[in-house]
Image (cartoon, rainbow, N blue to C red; front, side, top):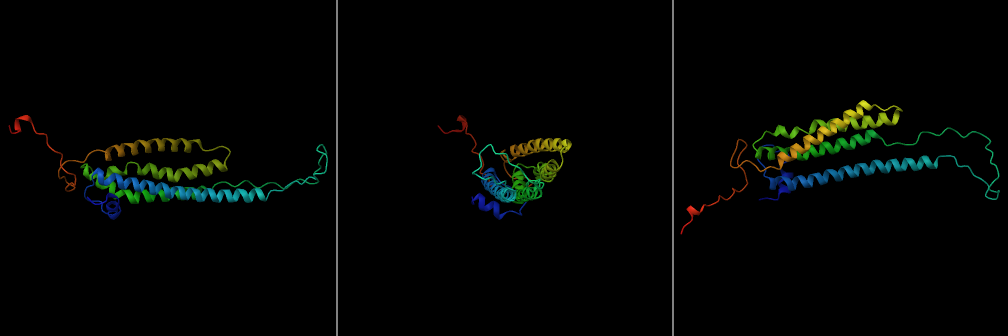
Length: 212
C-alpha cells in the first residue's frame, strides 16, 4: 500500500472511491496537526500585534516626576488636570475571525475528499461528512461579532452568547458522531462506490474441515 499521507495529499480533489481506516487516519492526523500549526501562527501574530500596541500605549502615558530629594511625606501639587487617557488597545476581533475562517477553510479543503472516500468505504453517502460544517461556520462568524459587542457595550448581548454556546454543543455532538462513523470498519467486498483495498478477513476453519 502506498504511503497514506502522500496518497491523501495526492487525492485532494478525488471524491470518488474508497479509503480504508489505514489509509484515512494517518493522513487525517497530519492534516489536524497542520491546521493547529497554522492557527497557532495566526494567533501568535495577533497577540504580538496586541502586545506591541499595549507597549506603545503604556509608553505614551504621562509620567509624574517627583524630586527624589524631597522628603517622602512632602505633598505633591498638580498644576493642571492631565489629559483624558485614550481607551487601552484590544484585540482586533476581525483579524481573529479571519484566522478562524482561514483554518476552517483549510481543514475542509484538505479533509473533504478523504472523508468522502472513508464514508464510501462504509457504504454511506458523503453528505454525512457535512454534519459539523454548518455549526463550524456559525462559530467562525458569530464569535468575532460577540467579542466585538462585548468590548464595545456595557450590556453584552446574552442572547448571542447563549446561541453560540448551544451552537458549540451541537457542533461537538455532530463532530463526535462523525468521528464514530469514520472509525468503523468498512463494508466488506465491493459496493456501489467501488472495490476496497482492504484485505479480506481470514475465515475460521472448523474441526470438521481439517484433515486427519
